[in-house]
Length: 176
Image (cartoon, rainbow, N blue to C red; front, side):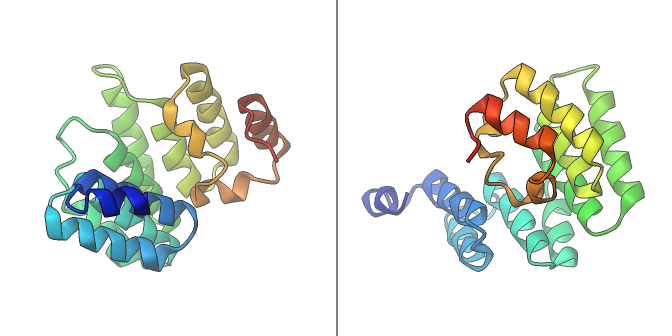
């Protein structure tokens, strides 16, 4: 990604994706700096805003994390920023708000596609391992693409010792 950025320094997508890789590597400070570079190109970059909020949450900067996603237009048809906000609410101990997000996602699924991964993501913030695993299994059945990050995303760190999580990683070919 760094080489891609050298080749195309004005690519918003490359800036944002490099930030995601830094987040997944748990280098949150570098990820935050990378998202700030993305905002220089487009202050409304939804991908960067979403992952910036998650980076803040992992650093324990809960107020900043929530503020980042509260500024996003969550009615734009994307469910993943709402799922991230729900996850962050859970991480911050705002259980009722996180549960409201789960309710919104489930209600939205009657009208539009809502991936099971999004619901698992919110439950992970709440620390509800059984629900996370149930929804990750559904995402696995759906063959949801972001499951490839399952073994790297710090949101799922509390699940790593769970034999059910290890089995899911094994079935995906991601076990170590």
